[in-house]
Image 1 (cartoon, one colour):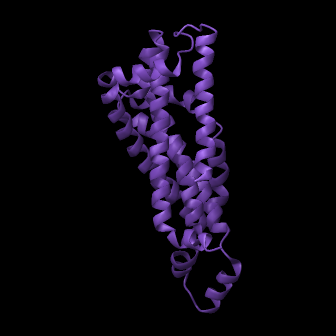
Image 2 (cartoon, helix red, strand yellow; image 1 turned 90 degrees about the horizontal axis):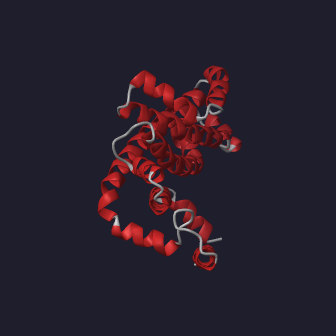
Image 3 (cartoon, helix red, strand yellow; image 1 turned 90 degrees about the vertical axis):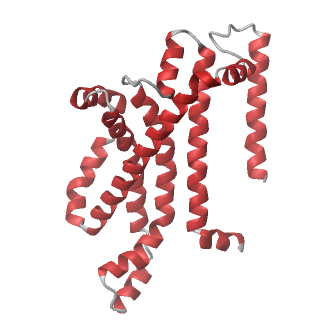
Length: 251
């Protein structure tokens, strides 16, 4: 419980200081609205942005699922085929040096303003953390157990399914948690390309009309979506790796 309360109290302190500062220094709300104004706007404007939330959620989950699937597939291929890893791995590293915001206009030119370029953007930001984390998990497999299974006559398939994959699960979930936060960010960025609805669209409209309070509402929604998706993955991780958590609690 202490791990939860300490950051919660600190966050509450920052919010109070924010509220007091805006009132003490008479900061205009269009420059920096107080938390109370943001909360009031979030409640009163619910009907204006609720459809934007559902659009972003669908886009996020679709891109996240595709990105994770591609990331896991690439990791397995690179692990099973070392010669492919030597060729492809440097290209993967180079791909992450290209800013998504720069690549986005090209995707619009190539694929138009539909859903496809948005899914591609989310996929690009999601697959890499999963691929790298999974590969690291495979590399960290206990060498003594590998030697033991080889001595026992285990096939490569048995080695992978019975030993390497279970050992890599903690690393895989670490990659999933990173990709979860990236997927929401990728969805919002992709909606800036010309979508008709979504949190990114709501944020753009609020910014262009100098409704800073609504911009902060959009930021708050993004944070909440990240927390919800992150928390869902943690719950799944605790269920799948419950043996590891039980072991940790007994220490």
